[in-house]
Image 1: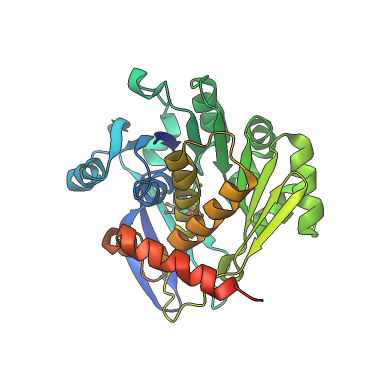
Image 2: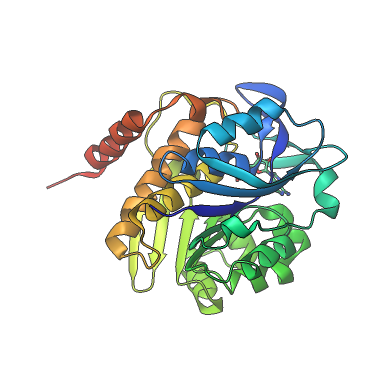
Length: 303
Ligand code: AMP
């Protein structure tokens, strides 16, 4: 089993959906990713928090095989994101982004992280993503996620780091925005021409698509009777996807392993949307994960 280095935000989130609203709950790409991936493999987290971040949550992450020696506690306030979803629950509208301690953050990669072969560059400043990638030369499999905020404001820097990774994990709408192309097949191929051989397109309740060189895999979303908040679905998807590959030790994954990884990613995303923030991810177990994996198999089986 290999460890995954993950860089991203540790945040307070304030979220409004048609099913309720919450203020300043624990969120951030590195938080959702790390908890999700830790059900499969050890995670080594790189991030920054302010002095207002709850110490007991850092202790919780430690208790889940998440190494936090790369998490800096800086003077100032923790990153705070506020977002809103309409009835479609498809894409978040960002209401406010307070970068706070992220504004002057320069990631330090602990020596103990440097033998990692798996790297997840979670949603954060593209320049920070590239910095971490450059500081981990033993990486064999690097995946990157991003969002509309960075596509709008840092497109060039983002494309530069995307060109250096193996896999881009991105929302359908954001892939269209990034490539200025409506057709997802064409858009994926445009990004493959820039560098990453693998493109995973997240399609919310409609599932996910995997473009792997010549082969394509399409998985539907699991029909769920309870959906409250899609925040973190992308990061927990990435956690299941990367966590499964790292647990297999497959830094050059076969197409079959990648398909399973997409299913595990979708399983983890299906949990997080059932409640606000990361609440549901804290309640599950490996058995529940395997039960949902089987539900996906039953859902997609036909003669
Ligand atoms: P997702 O998995 O795509 O729903 O990402 C949700 C998480 O992204 C939330 O918990 C936010 O704290 C975090 N987030 C939102 N905007 C940004 C940003 N500009 N940079 C880094 N993280 C962000």
